[in-house]
Length: 316
Image 1 (cartoon, rainbow, N blue to C red):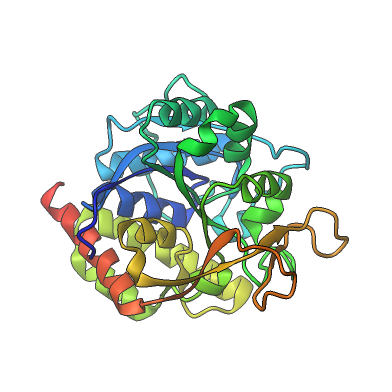
Image 2 (cartoon, one colour; image 1 turned 120 degrees about the horizontal axis):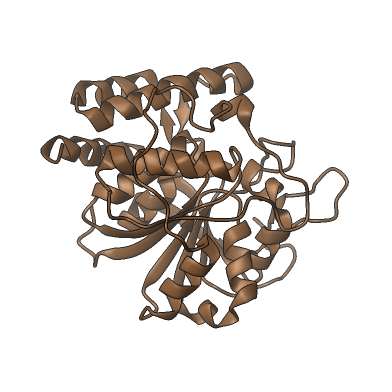
């Protein structure tokens, strides 16, 4: 892993199996400092995703980390959830007690704004669900825009998984995505082209199972459920841990190969609503506005993940 400075991050999420793994990676890896978690409706209703985030914090020993509940509805459209993939709770599989940890009294949007305005411009936002909270924060307080070091998001791609054209996170609130993608803030996008390569195969799951601490056992339970649904719905032979890719990039960008490309968000198309229109060949002539992740060093990625999960045995 890189010896670069420790990067401050806020994870905006809708846990979610892969969201949970992203939190665990960010909480224990020494190259990032997780300063807060914000929740949004996406994989499940925001009430459920918030409970799930609190449960993950308890498993990771993050009793003091602020968790702020955010938007329960998209900016414009009717809410959609992903129970077919993540179960009714949003994080089905593991059996966990109700959390003792509670949320802050601050809305996620206000938490994001407050943290950014008080910062030295060194906070990276890591939204791995629909972009509702981020867009709302940008609209409520435009002064945050120059304060954002980077937005590293999971969403989009040149293929879809919710419709033939659209990936789930962007589809759920494409109007919010349009606000974020047109904000001028430095963006790095982890779409399906990349995240489907971060596949927790049976061999990877065996490596995680062999760690044998409470956190790795929890991750193995998450992956067993996630692998089953991805097999049933998409025919995959493993579980893609989409969201963890964003945190891994914050830890060590050199694990990934990216290209600066122009990306537009489709909000009008009859069949293409929510599509990230990625100008791979430069045919529009528009200036690149997004750093698009396209390849990853699979061995280094999984070594990072296994090493971080192993470190929990020293804490718990």
